[in-house]
Length: 274
Image (cartoon, rainbow, N blue to C red; front, top):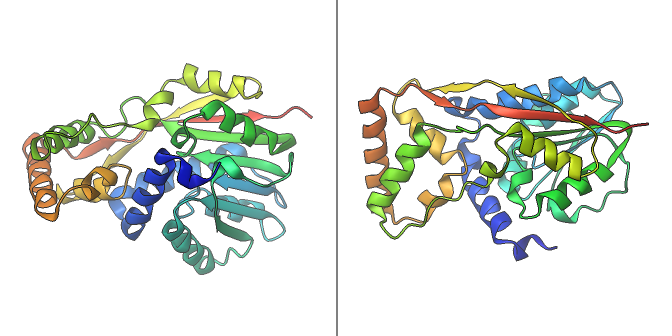
């Protein structure tokens, strides 16, 4: 299926392309932390071949490249081309020349079955309507003895900021629909385990990585909004309404004394039998 035929993926591409300018800012450190945690759990060996699906700016692809060494290979794909441009710059700066980043739709991958020692999906699988078919497609790419790693958000992701944002968005745009957070389909371990089982993966090892993102100042809350999936709603507003939303949100954060945002995630790993 072509990316442009799916509104959810079109929205993801537009949102994260827009967010590429600040994706690695300090208040967005949770992206790198979870990327590193996902790769650490795989215990990748030198010379391994890795596919990172929805790689963004390289939060998991770059640690994977460091782990597999120059004789290994990491391919990162994403629909957001500006994110990939950032990933390429970061890889070059770190001397990770065993990486290749390309714009591609995860639902239309052309790789042969059983090509990779590890396939990684960190915060990406919930951007497709048919997650079961997507999980099956990822599992087919894993070699016997290889691993599939899938990371999704926990049940209270981005709270209490998410609640404040939804409240203030409705005030500046009363006709706004209820916010759709695609990751909410997989926030419980049993849902993630069931998805992988339907995909053909055996019992997955699932770990909850407890995490909170520190906000040093109220303005960091806006950086988080603009460097995450919430940016889409902001981009739909006229500039004056964006300013009103930002001011109201930061006031809520300051009045409530919020200095941390929930960013815990579920990390699943399934190994394909030999």
